[in-house]
Length: 202
Image 1 (cartoon, one colour):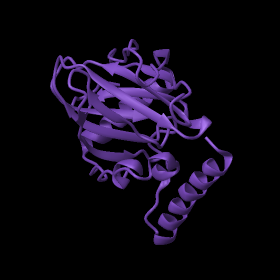
Image 2 (cartoon, rainbow, N blue to C red; image 1 turned 90 degrees about the vertical axis):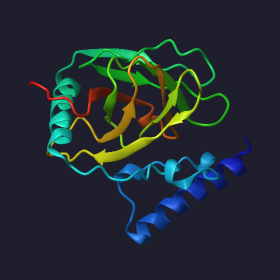
Image 3 (tube, rainbow, N blue to C red; image 1 turned 30 degrees about the horizontal axis):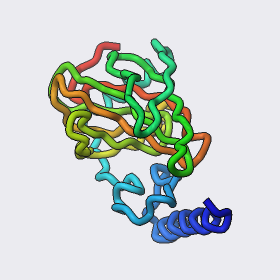
């Protein structure tokens, strides 16, 4: 990639972020705009999912996930590069996965996928220690799964987690969780997955 092209894309990403700030609609969830994808769906690009209403159940899930994000058990893993076989599984419940994304050789930035196989059907909350979210794909069909909403975790609720993405998934169906990052600091993060409607015990 030519240096001038990289500069132009960085400038474009910064301009979009500043424009959103000027309109008063940007949040910490849009701190990283992937300039290379500015031609795609802007709502997916900026993570502008509808905000989750804060039902008591979701707040309880976040509080429970926070315990695992802070106290474990922990498991370190490096995500599979895009296009490579996905061998890393993050299906173990009540576990904080410390994920590292590989450098994306086909583009710029970091990107990777991990596998998730729910044992029950229903809504799942994907809680991250970064603001940038994820995209979910059916491993068999390659089709993207709709994410229902996004919840920005207040720091007074949990300092170790920043974002929760909720999606409705089917039991015994393998999904690929895809993560991207333009910034190095967002290429390593924690992931905790919990059933969104499940009542947890501390």
